[in-house]
Length: 167
Image (cartoon, rainbow, N blue to C red; front, side, top):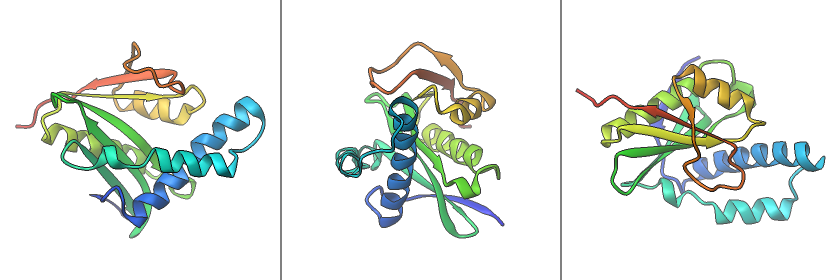
């Protein structure tokens, strides 16, 4: 089986399906850890609507979709800073059924390459303590933990990685 990664319009049905799966998983993990329950369906729908993919639309953003054996399997997005020198990595997600097959590293590297091609010199991201797999992935790919770069109430760990210019 093979992986492919390609840009996807953030408003496409594939993007919506992956965003729903991503948000459901990270939200359920948080609520199960902190409140012993899954996400309320109404809250899930409100958050999905409120946190759409508009920030991942070109020219300042990009959504990448990974496919495994031709089927949508995961996503990663980037958002460029106003000056274009920093890119934020966001929505890195793979369906559980395809994890452990190299797709997450492939997605992150594709996002780095896309950010570099757009002139970014560094990548930043945030994540939570309970997302241990994500933190391990970022460390393995050369990201270092740093001071907070945002005030997101769910962010507990912030990472950065310099991006070497193309050429």
